[in-house]
Length: 207
Image (cartoon, rainbow, N blue to C red; front, side, top):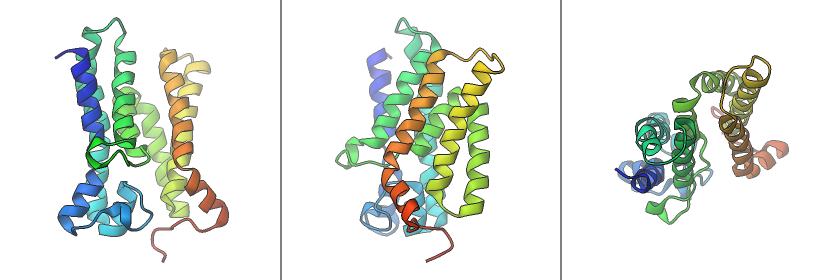
C-alpha cells in the first residue's frame, strides 16, 4: 500500500457519514434536516434516540482512530517522515473527510469525535484528560457543545503543560496540532458559541 493510497483511505474513512446513514436506515430521514442540522452524534441522539447517537459517535471515533493507528506505520514507511508526523497527516485527512465528506455532497459535521479518535491514537493521556473534562462540564451544563469546547481546550493545555512544564518529549508537531485542533473546533462551533451567549443552545433533558 503506497503513501497516496493510505491518504485516500484515510479520507474515505473520515467521510463515512455515520449519523446520516443511520438516520436513513432507522427513520428514512436526513438528520441534517432536523434538530440542530448538524451531521454529528449529538444531533443523531437528539433526532433518533440516544442509542443511535452512541452508535454514530462510536463510528465517528473509529474513523479517526483506525487510519491513524493502523495505516500510520505504513505511511511512515513510504515517506521521509517520522511516525508521529505521518500519523498526523492521516489524521488531518480523516478530519477533513468528516468536515467535507464525499458521500453526502461535502456537507459534513464539526469533527469533534473524529478528532478525538485521531488523538486517541497519538496522545491517549491528553485525550483522557479531555474526556474527563467533557464529562464534568456536560454533567454541569447538559450542553454538548460547551463540553466539547472545554474538552478540546483542556486537551491542548495538557499537551502544552506536559511538554513545556514537565519536559515530556512530545514532538513539536503534536503540540502545534493540538493547538490547531482547538482552534478548528472553536471555529466550527462558532454558531454554537453565539447560541451559548444568547442562552439558546440546546440542553439535553430540556425542551
